[in-house]
Image (cartoon, rainbow, N blue to C red; front, top):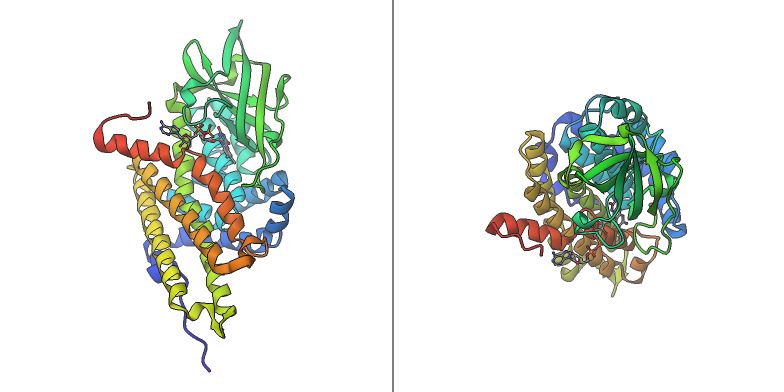
Length: 392
Ligand code: FAD
C-alpha cells in the first residue's frame, strides 16, 4: 500500500513563501543544532534540573545566534524575522534554551548595545556574541514584578563611585553570568548598571524546586553594597523606558518562540496518534482526534502569520509595543492551550518525559508569566484601545 500523503501543521499554511532565503537558511541551521545537540539531552537536563549553560553559550555563540539581530561588535546583524525564526526553532527544543538566547541577546546585550557607552560595548558585546561571556538582566524584585517602577534596589553616589544595594528575583542565568545588567533607583530616576559578577558584594544564589523551565538557571541577585566606578552606569537609559525597551525586544522573540514549543507538541502528537491503536484502529483515524488536530493546527498557523507580520513590521522599523503585546498574549496563550490539548491525546504517555508535551506545557507556564503576564498585555492592549490606563 502506498504511504499516506500527509503535511506538517505549518507546511499547510505555506508560510515559507513569506520568508527570504537567508532567513530560511538560518532557521534550518538552528533546527539542525536543536535536533543534533539538544533533543538527545533535553529530557535528562529537565529531569535533573540542570543545564550546561556556559558550554551551550559558546556553542550558540559559534552558531551566531547570540545577539544575532544586533549590528556591529561581532553580532550577526540579521533581520528581526530571522531572529524570530531562530527563537522558534530553539524553543521547539526547549523554552529554557530560547530563554538563554533571549536573555543574552535581547536583554543583556541589547541593553548595552542600545544604552551603553562605547567602552561598555567594546568590553562586553564581542565576548557575549561569541558566548564566551554570559549576561543576565536584573529588573524583577521579590515585591515588584509586573510593576517594576516600585523597585527598591538603590544606587547611591559615593564620590565618583556608585554603591548598589538590594535584591533581584527570578533572574535567568544569574548564577552563571559574568555580567549583570541591574536596574536601580537613583536620585535621578531609574538607571541601569553594568555589574561584573565578580564585584565584591554581588552574589546570585540559584532558585531550586521549580516545576517549569527546569532546564534553565533562575536566580536571586543579592547586591550588598556593590561598589562600581562611575563608568558602570548605562549613559543612554534614563527612567523605566530603558528596561522596557529591552523587554520589548525579548517579547518579540517570544512571539515566535512559543510557537516552536507548540509545533513540537503537535508534530509529536500527530506521529503518536498515527501509531497508537485504540479500539482496533489508529487514534488518528477518529473524528474527535482530527477535530482537535485541525483546531490546533489552525491556531498554530494563525499565530505564525501574526508573528511573521510583526516581524515584517519590526524589520521596517514600524513595530509598536502594543503590537508586540498582541503577539505575546495570543501566541503564548494559544501555545499553552495546544500543549495541554496534545497531552490529552497522548493519554498517560503524555505525562512522561518520553514525550515533550508536558515539559513544553510546564515551560510555557513561565513564558506566560515572564516578559509581562497575559493580564499585563491585556491591559497594554486595553489602554491602546480606550486611552485609559487601567494598571492601578
Ligand atoms: P505579580 O506581578 O505579583 O503578578 C501576580 C498576578 O497579578 C499575575 O496574574 C498578574 O498578571 C496580575 N497582575 C499584575 N498587575 C495587574 C494589574 N494591574 N491588574 C490585574 N492583575 C494584575 N525577571 C527579570 O527581571 N529578569 C529575568 O531574567 C527573569 N527571568 C524569569 C524566569 C522565570 C522562569 C520566571 C518565572 C520569571 C522571570 N522573571 C525575570 C520575572 C518575571 O518577569 C516576573 O515573574 C513577571 O514580571 C511577573 O511578576 P511577578 O511574578 O512578581 O507577578
